[in-house]
Each structure stands twice: as structure tokens, then as C-alpha cells.
Length: 374
Picture (tube, rainbow, N blue to C red):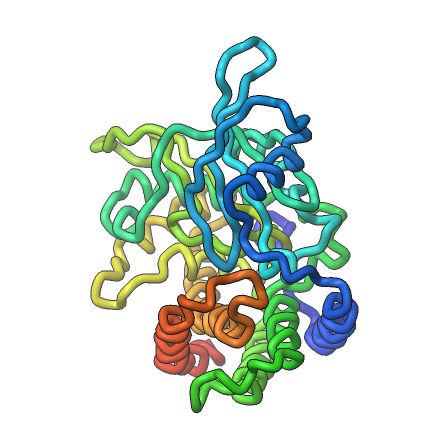
């Protein structure tokens, strides 16, 4: 079923091609990938200057906002052309971020949303990282999506508009979900690691690979829609600019919300985006908010609300995929550790996250059987 004529279903032959491509990519990248850890101090300032194209003597201050296995994020203040101070957010890509993305695709969706005022203003994009103008506001929380009707409706409008955009031509196949490429690249990176034996019992590499193949085969046959997706659409990747609660008709008043952290954006399952957005402990999940979200989403996309049931099915089937993707991600972090750019002292934390996501995947995978023939 298509939304606005711009959604596509995955071809059943695509998974094998993606897997083969992932193997070839791992062989290439294994020989040339740097062992660069997350930059610190003057080293990170030098990387920030590279991203912004600044000379060494240009005045700036950089304060780390976050660091992890994905990226290092810096709040940077520099002197603008008019002599005033300009606040920017600069993200320095880690090896794990580079593993899942292609050079020619980085920054493409950021530019698109910057031009459309659906994201933060893009300042610069390079191989080292990406810079945006700092947005005054706050990130959303899971509670926002399940308790605030105004935020839920505004986010539904934003995501529906985003999903209707054409997939940029830098992505070779607009109909093939990136999810399977990510998973196979991470699995193949684990395969060549000398530390792969450190994965916990029951979550070893062959087990993970088997689950990915089962899910790719099963979900691929369900013909779900593929759209221009965020790829990591958790609530914290949506920014709210201003926060005055709306008590009137939420369909008539639109809060200013923007998408951020778009490095994984590209063609992917529509339901994968929505499952990440509404992922929460089942005891706190609000069916009312989710139904309202789907209603506003369909209204914004100008399609009949009868499609809401189909989108609900896609979302609930994709929830196990969300947990499986997180499982493989944390398995790679555990297997690669410091050699992949992360602090080895955090291994216990990452292993706990791996076990948690695996348990959630195993508890949710039966959902697919419920909806398989619906």
C-alpha cells in the first residue's frame, strides 16, 4: 500500500544483494579504517576547525555535549562575520557512524531539511563531521509522546511531511531499506574482530546472524512501505522550540518541532521510524496518543484514515526490528571495544544494554506472527 504515491515495498531479492555488498564493504574498510578514538581536548578542537573550515588561529570555544560510540557532539561558539558570537553544534563522526553510512550520502538529508525549515540550519558537512546552527529548545521525551496531545500532533505532522519527501538520488535504491545493510555491516565487522568471543552466551555472532536473516526474510515478504526515513527517530531526536502547552484543538495549532541527528536518514521502513518514536515500556504505552498520532499523520499526508490500520500494523511489526538493531549495535560495541573508538572501561555497561535489548527483542518477536496474515 502506498502513501502519496511515494512509498515503496522492498524487493524480496534485495536482502541477499545487501548482504553481499556488506561483506565486500567490510573487506575494503578493514584495511583502511583508522583506529581513531573519540577526540579529546586540543585534538577535538582541531577536528572542529576542519569541519567548519577555520584557520588554526580563528577564535572559538568548544564544550563537549555528549560522547559515546556513535559520535562526539560539541557546542561551539565562534565569531560570526558581523563580529557577534555564533553558537553551533558540531558533530564529529565516530568509526561506528562511518560504518553504517556512505560518504556521498552524509549531510544530504540534513541539507534537504535545512532548506525546508524542518531541521536545524546546516552550516558545514565534511568527512570528519557536520555542523548546524544551535537551536534554542529542548529534545522530546518518551513521556511527551504518550502524555502531550499537542506535541504528539505536531510531531505527527512533521514526520508525515518528512516521509512524503523524495529519497535523494545519492541513495542508489530508494526501495531498499537501509536497515539490512546496517545490520550486515555490523555483523561482518564483528566477524573479523579478534574479540568476538567476548559476546555473552546465547547472544553469539551466529545466533545474531540467524535472527537477522529470519527477520529479513519474514518482514521482506510482508511488503511494507519504504520511505525517506530518519533511521533513529527516538523522541530525543526531535527538538521542540518553545514549550507552551496547547489546550485547544491540537489540529489547529502547530508547535515548532524539528528533526535532528540525521546521519542515518535514507530509505527505510516507515514502521521502523514510528516504532522508534513510540517505543516505551508497555505499561506506559498510550494507545490513545498513538491513535491520535496516526490520525493526524494520515490527515497531513492527505490519505484516507483507513490507512491508519496498515501503518499501525507496520509499526508494531517493526518494534522487534528496533530491538534487534539495538542488540546488534551493542554486540558490536562489546566485541570491538576500545579498538573501535570507545572506552573499554564501559564494557559492563554496554554488555548490560546488549542483554536488555536482546531480552526485549525475544519478548517482542512473536508480534510478527500475530500480524503476518492480517
